Image (cartoon, rainbow, N blue to C red; front, side, top):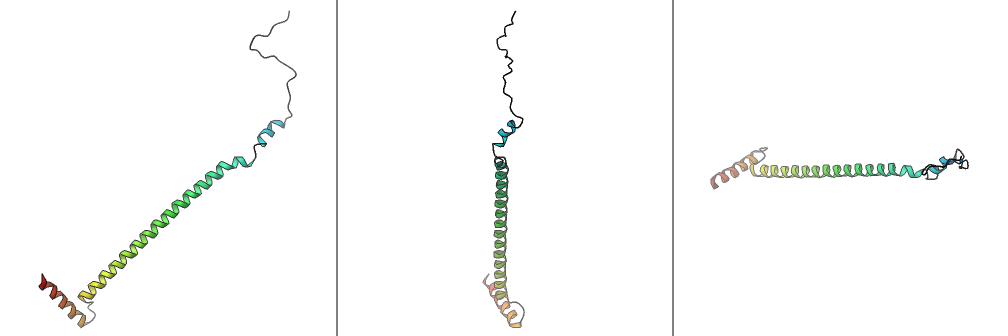
Length: 110
């Protein structure tokens, strides 16, 4: 008596294709070796750009702060020069007499 296959069961066949042992590896080789390096290269370029942009921003910030410090120093020197001119620098007797005159004139005006 011949047994019937049950529905859903697979038939065993000896005519199955047998591939050479190297054939499954050829499928992966056809993708291209350069394709697997693209995401890391893009990530590296992105990180490099981010670091460069951050460094440039820090350099610009530092330069702006140094320019502001130079301007503040120039303003301080200008004010000191004005005070020295108004009150004398006390290096000579004439300068001291001139400073006393300016000081007395300011005191009387108040």
